Image (cartoon, helix red, strand yellow):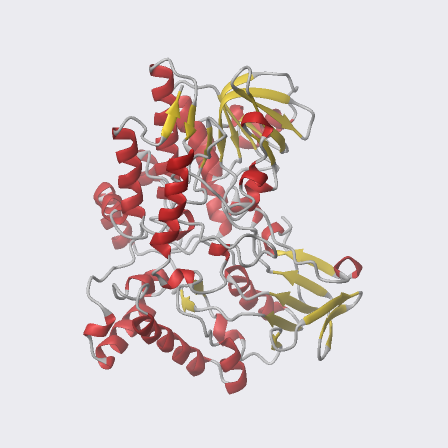
Length: 543
């Protein structure tokens, strides 16, 4: 049966009440590996996916230019050596379409389709205190139960749409980068506006500008971006990495952020300005997120950080011909307090005569009208409006769902003051509910694929341990959870990452508690997870 035929069969299947070893919420890379892992351990499991296809972020984010910002040879599964060796990536940074093909290939290769249910959103999850199982209710009226629930809902899957006055009145095409149509969108001859200059916008803007009659970019906060220098992967590089994949992965997993970013152990301030300039030029020429590895003190010393930030601002001023526009595009915050973006021709796009940059911090957006967008000092007539306004990151996919634990406690209430987890994996009061790449784990500060595999492996081992020892329940203890939340914030506090209004802290969502959500340090995190297990699941109550 082909993947298309099996998707249709699953979507059209009759809905009957059933009990599973695990219900998996989400059909992205985390959900697919969770299904494969749990089935391999002998658990019955089923994925429930809201979309009509798998792929998670690579299913929903189809905007022009969408591609990964981690090198393809790293942003891939490592659990199966034959898969690693046989799959070939066409580009250094794979485009969305190829990542989606990869997800479908994995589902085909490991025969995952029979246990994937598409077009089905989990409307509610409730823990039954009497029977000690989870009850899942779908938006199609189906109810199933499970011993375990794996939340593979993704960190960046709940889109953020600002409550602009008059948004519903806009008569043109309204698009969001996080929910892009499947069909190609033609901007030829159109007056287009895009709100936002984060990663999605930085990838989208050059391609829309090449089509549109005019593109107006509404920027609130400038972001640092470095060139991708994307292109085909040289055969020699592919052969080299594949000849030592296990060692390559192991070395990356020992780094701070879990990726091959050519980390230096010396500090920026040990070197002369000329030496630093040469190093930053080398990083710029290499492209990609290797800027994170430039010097060991960039994320902790503001003076050192500013040497790299000033270098990138200098590049912006060199590339952008209009001095006033260049200054608007120069970020003022510390480098890497928000995730560095990776682009192809972003800054040069502002040299085009059909592109205008509007600073909406100086002239705020007042309203969306039927025919355009109005700021405090001008009205912009638009045929199309693109919202590149990001996501309710990390917690949004969970708190927007009705999840109730022991005694009917709602997760959104448990997290009213900010997310509280133990290891980013479990929440006190929510037994046998596991989160993949949740708040309190390295998650978005790492290469997501190895992080996903590490989490799923831990979850699978925990479920297997319970079964092997005649146990039914694992739950985070409140003291361990409180200590972990404090540790996550203490680890981030001395660094640059905690110094600006980023989505790492939920600062992009009005009213969201300001808490630093990801854990900084992949290698020490993995060591902690292993230590917890070695000590008999220290910090968890097993029953």
